Each structure stands twice: as structure tokens, then as C-alpha cells.
Length: 640
Ligand SMILES: *Cc1c(COP(=O)(O)O)cnc(C)c1O
Image 1 (cartoon, rainbow, N blue to C red):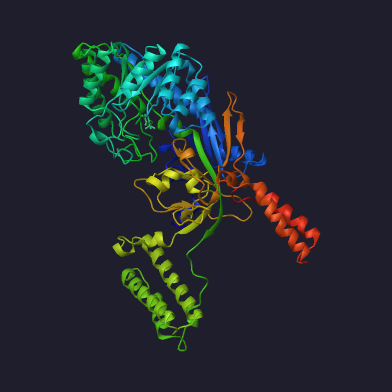
Image 2 (cartoon, rainbow, N blue to C red):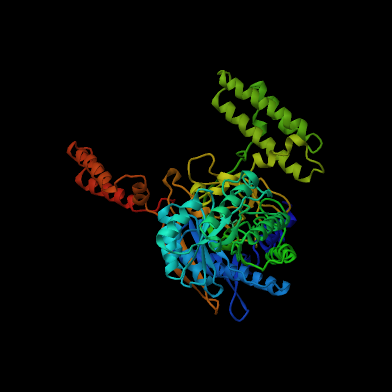
């Protein structure tokens, strides 16, 4: 970065550099203190902003240190409302003659706090839940308060699953069983006959349309779930034989998650509507069209059909869906169905932020060097290397880099054969770094960067060690190369003068983040600030509310992080509405079947024996057992 830029740096530069207003969806911005703030609209239409630094430091004072998962309840409420209002608006605008009834798919974030908040925020809109397993059905049955909200059951269903749903229908709960595989039809029919309940049956179809994005490799004919047209006809005939066509009410499909292109959304709706119209024609009752999930989140803020983005707004999504349904069904003279969507990601992504502190950094910089000290007495290769480094200038970048690399590698190989000493090798490595950094600085000003040198800035970037586990808190970064906005939550008045990648505190070399959202395209390094002595440096990983929490695992036995939910009030003040202390070491050990009590007992015996053998005093035994017990009940992460 040029000196001038560093001096005149403002929050505006930061906002642009990190794309905060692009991916922030109006919820995140910077305040005058150079901190990231969350912005919510209250009931009078006025906005309140709260600094994430204030939330974080308050949590730390309450004993909920980093890493800390922050849930902002207002954002969950806002997203639920926005989805329902957008559909209501589209329905009104297009003259659609039925309503929208969303359901939230529990698998996207099963945490009790989240599901309860969605149920509460969704109540005025009769927003329901989608359950993909018995456990999720049980959750849905005990969470939803209004019987006008729907419960859509997808996934493999055994008799117990179906019986529970059927009996709940006696209570007035609107449960839909979506047939996912041909064999389920018979089970539903026999359970319904035994329970004497008329079931609401839905059917999931396989669409031929394939969609883009790497979440969706199994869309189309090879999708695991859903019925093809042959199976669908067989199902209709079987229901007809049992006089149950009046129970077939819902058509469902799911294109896959994070569909970035609106064209794929529209194609899916059009194809599904053909099936819908034909099922009506066959004599099925119908009345509900369930488009599944797929509504994407613009993680990189680019508003494009890139995998991490979407080329449509929520309003466009709703209007397109409504128009596509009307376009097909009106021409067939079919009544407009209730529109259901199962948007998970778009509902919860915004509301969670992972905050973590940076513990340390590594820099690839030479130690102060006096190249004049290398002279006649040194190894000729070292002298050659010095010459190559000394001669670096803007017109020979590639050439001098190649030379320096060659001599460094020669010295490494001489070292292997015992022909140069450790000190000489260290000198060579240092000299090489010196040259590489010299070249990197000149590259900043170069008109054109030679291909071989393009990766140099990445190779020389810093490593910032973050107090978190990628595998526990951000598993999709590791598993499917997901990108999340990652930004310091403070110091935006200052220019970030370092370039870094992030390493977590697991000792797994995959525990790193080295792909970041950029202004135009994905970046290999993240601009960050220098650490300041005695001051925490806190980064936030944003838009992580969907899928991350329960997909995480106990790699290196790092457990759940601390969690706080925050509620911002009408007057702009905020409360820590809920808090959960992260796993203790005893907790995670018991998850993998250890018994902390037995472990203590064994350790106590070891200590007792040491006293007997005269290795420690009884006093020291007390001390060491105290340390052991304190560790056992402590946080699994780095504690300050
Ligand atoms: C996972 C899933 C969803 C949620 O998809 P999002 O893209 O997160 O909205 C919806 N429906 C079904 C059947 C799913 O499997």
C-alpha cells in the first residue's frame, strides 16, 4: 500500500475494501469509531445501530470470552418478516389468488434458541417448519404455537414417524407427509388406515432441470430423493385404488441449496407447474405447491451468478416465482395453489457472527541484515546469493528472483550433504527472504507482474493465528470451500498494512482460511492491521447462521464456543437475551466417552505415588491437583 494512502485512510476506504455494504444487506456497516455496527429497524421505521465491539466487550466482561458466537435476534426476525412481506407484495402486485406459507427447514440451524425465535417471529405470518427426521418433527410439534402454520415432513419416514404425525393431525396440526421414495406410499396408506386419519400427502418430484453451484451436483435425474414420472403415475394409481386422491395435496421439489441464478429458479417453477397441473387433471385434491429451498445468500456481495452470490434480489425472486406459477397454471385453468418455500439459508445466515481474537502472527520477513558482512571467507554460493539479492531492481525482477532461488536451493542441498553449516544456511535463508521482500515491494509498482512472480505476495504473506477451530465453527470452509465475509470488527480508521492468511488453533494443516472475498474477485490474502501490544484484535466471520453450527465437529477436542444472543430494543439499547457457556474440557471428553471422574482418580493416584516416592511434597500435590481440576472445567479454547 502506498504511504499516502496509509496516512489518509478513512472508514470509507475500509468499507469499500472489505465490501461491507455489499454483503451486509443493510444490516452491517461501519460507525464513526471505525467499528462494525449492526443496524436494525424498529417498529417506528427508525434505525438503531449497535457496535459489535460493544457487544463483544460486554460479553467478555460477563465471562463469555472469545471465540464467541453472536446471534442477533433482530436479524432473524427481520429476515422471516422480509420473506413473508416480499411474497405478500408479489402476490398483491401480480393479482395472485392465494397465499404464501413459508416453512423453515430445521436442519439448517436446529439450535433451540434459533428455532424458538423463528417460530415466534413467524407467528404473525403463520410461518411453519420443515422436518426431515423424527427428531425434527418432535421439535416442530412442540415449538409451533399456531395450527395455521404448516409442518412439512420430508426425508425417510418409518411408521413411528408417520404415526406421530397422523396423531398430531387429530390436534388440528397441519402435518404434510411428502413422499420421497416410491416405497413410502404403502406405509403412509396403511398407517392412515390403522389410525383412521385422512393424511395430507405430498409428493417430491425429480425435476429434469439441473442448476448451477456446487451445492447442487445431484440435482436433476440423479437426485437422491423424489419420484420420476413413472413412479408418480404409480403413486396416483395406488392412491386412487384406496380412494385417497383427495389426500394428495402437495407437490414438492428442491433444486438444491444456494441457487445463484434466477433463471434456474424460474425453470424449476415452470417444470413443477406442469406436474402440478397434471396431478389436478388426474383428480388429486392439490392446493399446495412447495418450491423447497435454494434462495441464495450473497456471501461475496457481487450480485452475480457466482456460486457465492445470487443475481437476484428477494423481491425479484418472489415476483418471478409468482409470475411463473400464474403463467403456467392460468393457461391450464388451474386454481392458484398456496405457495410454500423452505428457505433455510437465506432466513438464518445473517443473524450469526463468529468473533475470535488473534493470538499471534508469523511474518516472512528477514531479520535485520548487514549484507556487507558476507565476504571472501564465506561460501561461494552464499556470495553468489548476496550478489543476486543486491542487484535486484525494477528491470530484472524475474531474473534476479530466479537467481536467488537457485542459489538458495543450492545452499539447502549443500547443507544436506554437510558442506555448509547451520549458521551459513540460516544466513542464506535470511538473505533470500530479504531479496524476495525487495522484489515484492517493487512488484507493487510494476506495470506488469511476471507470471512466475504472481504468487510471491501470497507466499510472503503473514499468518495470523485465530482463537477458533475451523472444523467446529466454520466447517463449510474446509468441506466445500465456502466463502464467508471475514473482517476485523474494529480499527477501520486505520489502513490495514499487512496481508495475511488465517490459521486456526487446531494442529491440522487444513485448519486455515486462505480464500477471501475481494472487491472484484476472490483473494488469496486478507488485508489486516498490525497487532498492537496489549490490545485485542478481533475478527468477525459473518453470515454463518446457516449449516455451520451442527455440522461442526470436535477436531482436536475443541468444543462448542460460547454463544450469546443479543436483542436490540426500540430505544437502541441492547440485552444479552440468552447466553450459553461453551463446552468445558470435561464436556468434550465425555462426548468421546471418557469419564472425567475416573480420569481424575487415576491422576490423583499418580500424584499420591509421587508424594510417597518423595518427588513432590503433599503441598505440591494439592497444587497440581488443583491445576488439573481447573483445566478440566475450563474452556477448550485459548484463555487469556
Ligand atoms: C436443505 C433443504 C432445504 C433448505 O435449503 P436452503 O437452500 O438452505 O434454503 C429445503 N428443503 C429441503 C428438502 C432441504 O433438504
